[in-house]
Length: 310
Image (cartoon, rainbow, N blue to C red):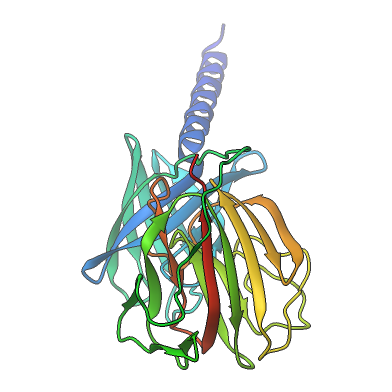
């Protein structure tokens, strides 16, 4: 065999091996990751999804401490290290730039944020949450007693008050978090809002169901009844502002069903991960309910949880 032929075969073998190694690295990186990001002296939850597009390109989605899931057009991977950049969403400034690598069972890396500062983060694989097809339901429990805020804590300066037996947030202020935590449950909410207002409820403190004045609009994951940035209702069923409305939500594992104003708008869909503004992303653990009070005015007259007990 001639020397040139030997060189050609060797180069082909090296290229093949490199492709195989890159494919193995890609497979190790693919999936959903819950990130803990050190941001301004505190740890905030974030979320990253990595998946294939076509033969060799990696793409994904990212959720920060605010906003919706942001698409990642390409994740570059080389020698076990990856990087990507995404444009700002609600921020002002330059691109968000990420660098990371898989070390053992964890992702570790840095975020160059739009403010020019660099923040460290660590990621672990999102847990698989079991779906119970035949749950045993406990007794319904009213979390709002119509008299006071017993069982709830405001995060920040409290603007919530009770008016004629109605839980009322008249202006933007603190979010309201239940002291009790839940795994799987049914949730019944009755609420109303003024024209143009915006609120939401976070299930287990991690997954926001949007509450907003969106009557007449096309359904969207960021509008009434959507799982913010992830799941889109099959129709828009919002009533006019000022009218009482209702959600009946069933959450078992990651699987959610939402009945809004008597119509099933999301049916047994899986929530991929936490939404922006979540309390945490410790998804294997029980979590609180959180009512959003940092956007617009909103009122609730009923908050009832029926937990799964087996």
